[in-house]
Length: 115
Length: 118
Image (tube, rainbow over all chains, first blue to last red; front, side, top):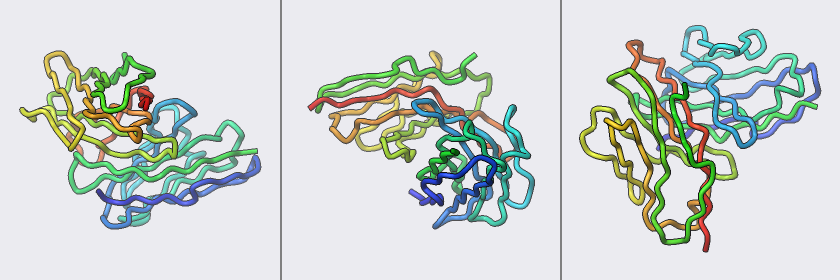
């Protein structure tokens, strides 16, 4: 299957700072990427759909000004958590849609801890 | 209403036995897709198997097969000859039909934690 990377894999930051997480499709072009959030022992919750060259589509209840998404190229989408608070601590996972609608490849995830 | 329901929060299975993980779904779309992912303790999501709503045959991938019963809206994952490395969380997910390409988001169930006993 195709490879999706995320960077960083783990980040610890202070309250009030901003954190950027990168999601890259390494061996294919992804016009669409997705950002999920997962709390411990819980399921994945979709935050937003990121489309190359256009604004992201956010799910209901997700603050777009807090979770900034930029899909600058066909291989890179970034999620910036602005003014992070401890309640933003979570596991963030991105996925990239392959050439087929039936393919969605996930990155290894980023564990964010806000102190 | 839950779109994806996984009723087994945890399962314990003896090594080498087959195991069935349950998944039921709810959609009014005619075109949809069903996915199973494995999430080991490392956190990565590993794609296992896919079943399209129009596929007449049950999907199979190695030791994984999907028991697709469309009328009952169920898409159970069957793992044959289980191995210790199969211990992980397993998520069922659904992609509902959309007219706009690019909105292929997945809705996940709550997962089943499978533990293989040696």
